[in-house]
Image (tube, rainbow, N blue to C red):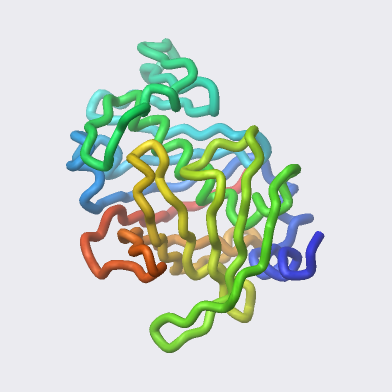
Length: 239
């Protein structure tokens, strides 16, 4: 493991501690312009999210006013009722976004794919840095709001689906994440600057509870508005 990767992971509680757990569950509140733009203004505004810490899987419950339950994995997304009966499913879901732009509406299965893919990535970071096949490369430091952050370029292998194969994380001198950049391929490659804060220690692991995502300009600077997505986590439990 590279020294810089070790520093980041140790700052978040360490790999040994992280590996004691297999699931993370939290209460989730979301806002921002994206949801209405996609025709899903309140479906996931207040819900709970569960992500697997070993394999790529995530679930939101309740999913919409009918209290459905979503199940996301790279090759399949599904919606079930509270009793576990599958109501609808979609195989090879990423292909359904072909030709999409930022303004293209999503159906519920597409929303479940996006939300599952996003939250699995966010809540497993930075421990994804040591996932088999993940490549990292140190970039030059970045100055923002009077602070200097270090940067790490991440290239995911084909077996991990995320917003984009290449992403960048920013972290402070202590190794804690400050920002996360990516291009949302399933929304026309929309570039995002994702700010991270509100760290809380949960069972020995430091987890951000406050995330704000803004458009990213070609020079790497974030736009002050619109707020694309807001994410607030509470009642976090590791099992």
